[in-house]
Structure formats: structure tokens, C-alpha cells
Length: 113
Image (cartoon, rainbow, N blue to C red; front, side, top):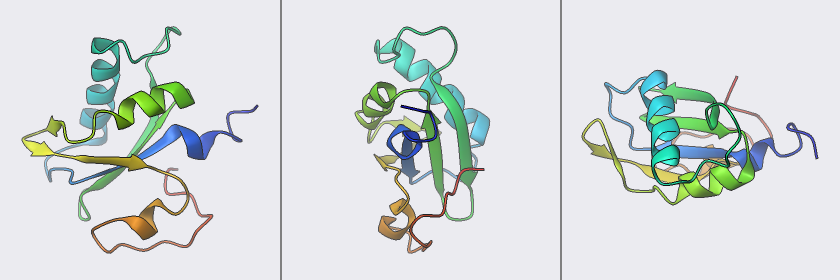
């Protein structure tokens, strides 16, 4: 299966992001956390391949290199980043419609660029 075919399964929505958190912070946190809990799949390189953050709406999308790593990252739900406990949810195409902050996007349109 190609990376594009599994993209939605390799992405998570992270809600409750602190206003001071950056894309680099989110990427670093998930890379370090997955390695620390043996949640990385053992491939060389970092587990996170892409991240997008919307500071105004306090959410982020994080894309991982494997479905396994994505599942392991979802288990980190509630962990604190920059003093705020975040919500980790599956990040499929309708994730924005399910977001608690009221932001809406049409299904089938990607939020990570």
C-alpha cells in the first residue's frame, strides 16, 4: 500500500494545544515520546513526517510514517505539552468536523499541507 493510500490512517488530530506551542514543539514531543515508550517502529529516522498547527484554534494535525506509530501516539492522549493536557484523536478527513472547538471543514479535504 502506498503512503498516500494510508495517509488518513497515519494522521492524528491534537486538540487543546497551548498558544505558545509551535509545530517544532509538537513534532519534537511526539518523536521523543514514541522513542521513550518504545512506540517507534524501529525504522531509522523520526516517527513524525509532518505537522501542522493552528494556534488560533488550538489544534494540530500530526502525520506519522506508519499506522503502528499513529496508533501508539493516540495512546498518549491527555499527556501535557507546554503545561496543557492535549486531546489526541484519529485525524481522518472528517476530524475537523468532530473537533470540539467548533471549526468545520468539508470531508475529503486535507488540513496538512
